Image (cartoon, rainbow, N blue to C red; front, side):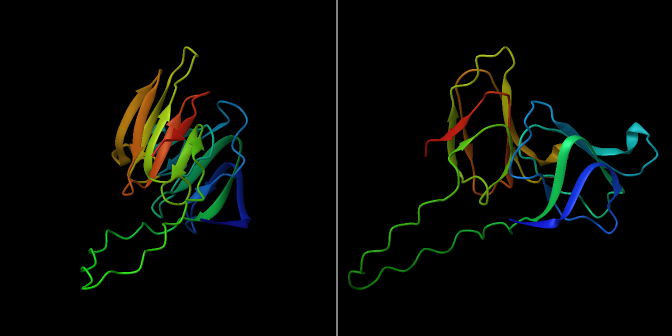
Length: 194
């Protein structure tokens, strides 16, 4: 993912034409539990039915703005930065045919340089979070949290592949075919276990 430092957009209402590419706030996430909100709009009349999708910014957040959106509205202390989202990973490759004689030992697989612990936020699979199994001890606050596996980042409910509420200990698996994962809940930290 490559950010364009000259292409930042502060909170406010702005037309998306020319269309903005997918956006991501700076790598330093918001410092409060509810730092802002965003909305993709079909028009700028102020009519509540113009909201195509919306969300709260609690940590790193990715929103895909479509060319058909009339505007993107954001509130709070959030600066959005245009980024290039990497193409999805290619599908599995066919298994190699067995060699007639012993092959030399293969090089060990490269160790992932992606982080292994995550707090609240939305993370792109493959470039910000690795596929695998993650675990949390939960939270001791009265408010729990949730995890989402997503097929996209437009905020459309149809992109939710799976969702689960979290209060106590929990385990979830990120698949290589997931587009993104969203963790919600103050004080809930997820750690990769495999």
